[in-house]
Amino acid sequence: MKPFATPRLLRSEYDLTLLWTILALLAIGVVMVYSASIASAEADRHTGYRSSYFFVRQVVYVGAALVAGFAAFQVRIDTWQKYAPLLFGMGLAGLLLVLVPGLGKEVNGSRRWLSLVLINLQPSEFMKFFVVLYAADYTVRKAAFMHSFKKGFFPMFIVMFLVGFLLLREPDFGALAVMTAIAAAILFLGGLNWRLFVVLMAVLSVGFVLLVVLSPYRFNRLIWFWNPWADPFGKGYQLTHALIAFGRGGWWGVGLGASVEKQLYLPEAHTDFLMAVIAEELGFIGVLGTIALFVFLVWKAFSIGNRAASMERYFASLAAQGIGVWLAVQTVVNMGVNMGMLPTKGLTLPLLSYGGSGIMANVLALSVLLRIDYESRQMMRGRVP
Image (cartoon, rainbow, N blue to C red):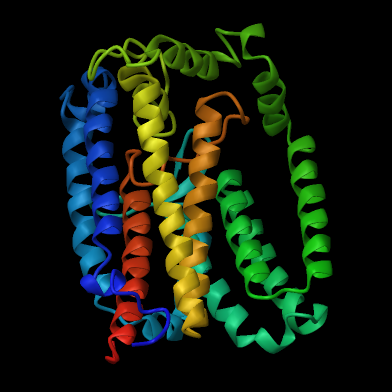
């Protein structure tokens, strides 16, 4: 037995605590999406005025994601690495297609969806997963040049600049922020020269500030985020109602299904602002429990990544940690927006918020994380995974 192969790790071939955490979050998401969407579903003619419309679709999305996740788990990690550039290219093609008139579907001023026969596909959600794989593969392939601006840093910068350009055309500033964080973190964890990393952070900071300042609607969001109560029936409407939901929840909440804010007061209650409904119905304890599940999930991702690195499985290590960064950043941003700590931004809560593309991408990524852990355990046993 190798030094890092502890008896506790070898008790099972799978990380059951990680699996149950994922399933618990998916289950909480289904329940809370149903609770948060009843009123809006009953009031919308496009749903046929059926209260269970979003609930049924979310159940189907979760079921399809679990089937796809099971299939993804069967794929070896070296195969994911082999096809990482191809998957990244497919993601870029998807970002291009949504900008083509007649193919891309526009909702609330953003063109982010491809309207297929039965579903609307959001390529930017899958692109987060592809960026994790591509950045990990790139860093491993360029390991010898991580101290070089020209050979190590610059090519990745150009690729991500292209991704950013396409995302801003949609526009999807939130997805750009998440993908940038993923790529930068993987490069840093993969050994990027610290001076280059500092320069990268400085350039990104200036870039994001310019994107906000030079865009009237982004700048207005920032202004009203500082004091939403200055215009509670206009620009600050969504945030003020989210804060009211948090205030009403107190310690223990008003009870599952008893939210007032979801009664057509809080926009996007079952998507971007699901955490506000959780806060109102389940209270501080419910919010704390949800945060604890995400913290455990992210800790597991980095723990699995560290173990893979100790076994010299560098792609697997960076991919696992990249998944952890993705979940951490998107969760923090979503919760920060709901709590009024960050400007309003259209990012869903991973594994919980309504939406097929987001759920599918999250489950695929976590299936790869489970596969990384499984292969490490197999190697500890002296087997070839």
